[in-house]
Length: 120
Image (cartoon, rainbow, N blue to C red; front, side):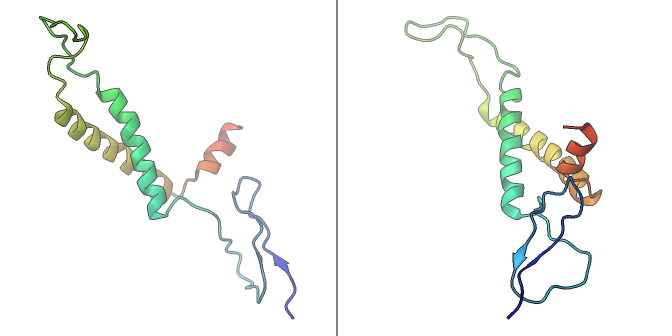
């Protein structure tokens, strides 16, 4: 019967938890960490960036209604241009997400490395 083995952590900033498993342990120094390369993680990151960008883009070009009718908010925009703002939001969010993807995946920087360097 195989013994219970724990894989050591690579550094104090690694998000790895010691992996518990039964069976043969390889001698390689490669550790499996939770990373941000999953497709669902990337989709959720893009959605969060998109929503934050949307709230920054919504005030662009807003003009109040000149003749507010009874029952309408006088501060409501005359023409909200939501389609243009959604397209602008998507383009800006894609650029921000692409820069973050390049920074984290191509250059090999992780969020935990950044936190460790900031001393948080």
